[in-house]
Image (cartoon, rainbow, N blue to C red; front, side, top):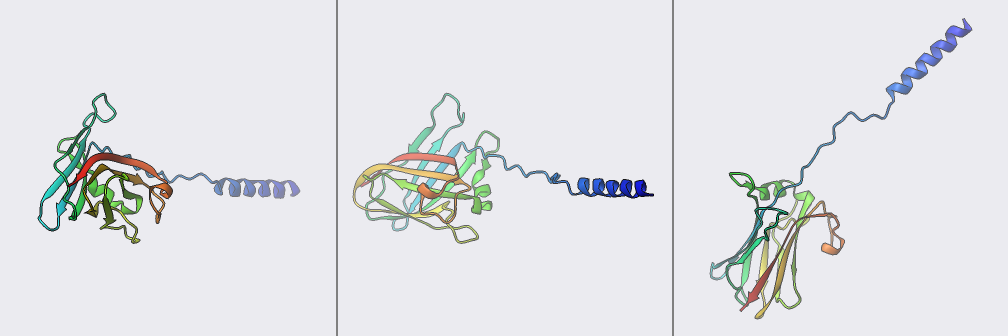
Length: 184
């Protein structure tokens, strides 16, 4: 009788121990990294309607060919531009619009705009995630005095939000493009 009680207690303990296992059978959701071959920034002047396009296209990704970088014209001093950014994966046909995915996952992405100190432009976010933090696929750019320098667009995946800029955003860089820009 005593042996039966001990056997029963051991059996119950074994069942409880195995049923409380910390095995997590829930599969981890894999969010594959986006392939971005082309980043296009379109700047539309609010006063004249003139359009300036900045584009970098790297169809071989990390391959031997350098990206093709184009800037369609100069910015006008004192003009304000409505900006939009489009991201494409052109390794597939038809090209995949990655912008939609970035905007759908707005809480996991943020664009940053960095102007060199010699370039007199300012930027402001025009679209936000569901928590009111900047996303940045849409923005405004105000061209100040005649100047020239670089303007860099950086897309960060899983940044700390809110943040004060790239220095405390953390996350990983999904895309980065630098353009030589002139304000005349």
